[in-house]
Length: 251
Image (cartoon, rainbow, N blue to C red; front, side, top):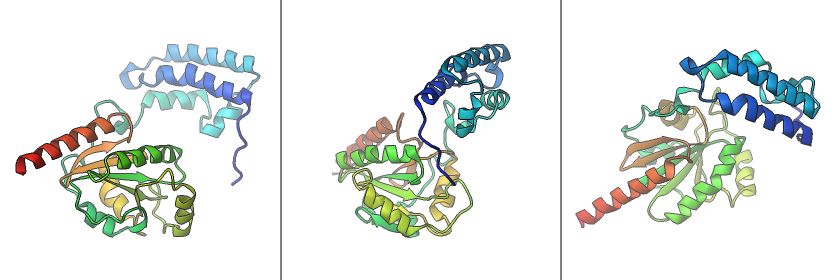
């Protein structure tokens, strides 16, 4: 497949207009909050802006981002995001027990300290090398691993086919990727098994349909499932405080 060429300045302006006029104002208007008339007015405003920028057919550009018509966009916005991306969502995996040592024993160790247990607080990071947000979050998770060294274990579990039919992992590709991105992925990295054991036993039951996906395990019990951003760090810090307070009481 031939990659798309970089966006021109005009195309960038068009995408910015699309985001500001047609996307962001309607992100939280799904289900019973949806109204057609405001969206119709926004479409007219966007068409006018697209013509100002120099595009009679905005979908020459938008189709590259899987936006193919105003009606398909309307249907998508009316439907709203998946449940896991809505406010107040809670994963069914919360409160369940997971043995991270048993989990990674099914996976192939690629880089970083080999995990053999001994940590009360463990962060699992499900990711893929083709996922830009995963690559962006790698340095942030690496910084957390450095900041809380000796107190938490951060374990990346790579699965390149996490959203599709399970395929045998390309170990050489992953070795090269990690060699090229050593600074960004300084924590322990495993590759999921050929059968997708970690994907099927932990990621899928968590029902968070995005990556990167972090799963916080404290004393073998899941306490967080979701994005490594947003509310993750406060949850991690709270878990560490509780674990260290309980350790102090036991001494």
